[in-house]
Amino acid sequence: MTVTTIVTIAGRSLLALLFILAGIAKIAGPQPFLDHMAEHHIPGVLLPLVILLELGAGTALLLGWRLPFSAGALAVFCVAAAFGFHFNLADKAERTLFIKDLAIAGALMVIAAGASPAATAVIAPVAAAAER
Image (cartoon, rainbow, N blue to C red):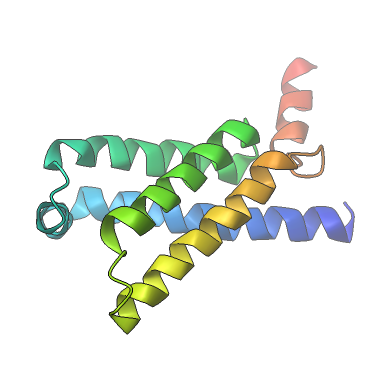
């Protein structure tokens, strides 16, 4: 494995963990998330879909599977979260969270647009072994 491959996998894994751990936290204690959604007039019925997206696309991102779709879906989610939850730019903390969500979306867009063989290096050896 090259250094580029290792760094690519490490960076993608760190991003994936953000979503996987967030999904697990929502399963473990959904009420604070439902309350936060209600404060922003976002229907609580969407929470299971958010959990499914965070766990499913986060795991796909971790494994390097269908990167254009998984990273792209998470990028759209981050942009929606930025505008849906953190658009109070007069509040310094909210402004920071808004910019953070957009920055994460940008990183995910780069992954989605540049899904190269190196980017899928974690799952490729598993797939090759399964074909034997």
